[in-house]
Length: 204
Image (cartoon, rainbow, N blue to C red; front, side):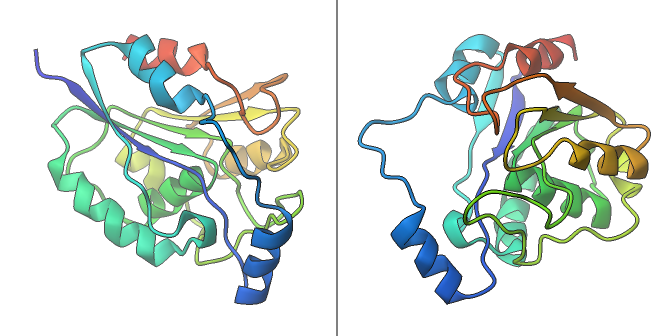
């Protein structure tokens, strides 16, 4: 049995200028001495098992991201995916997929698209958080659900970075998408496990 590919796009940060970026590095960037356990890491590999191949590209300059850079790198991976594949985008990776899929018609459509805590616009909150760098969505997002009929967006009521009203903004533009709002996911989905996404993937 051929494996189903999952292309997972991580999050990142964007800045209007270098001054803001340097301020972020000096004052807001956490230093981790030990690797963090993330639901999108080993947990997802173990929970899904050997029938899936998870590809996690390191998108360019994730701490000072630009949409055009990510688009170039993303498009290098698309032709390498199997005929059966899934797209996952987390946080900035989620709005990256939203913009890309709303502006580009895919030759081979994915089985599903999952966007976890994707911001809708620049009303993100929290220290050092702003949404620039070309990630702004166009007014018409209908091509997203033309590219894939199975689109799920996941939000958390306790998210301090992407408030839950972003879910309603997406719902207004994408009535066909499956919008899920959870009571609590440790804020911005900073959890070691996410069984909900595993169950949805296995049901495909």
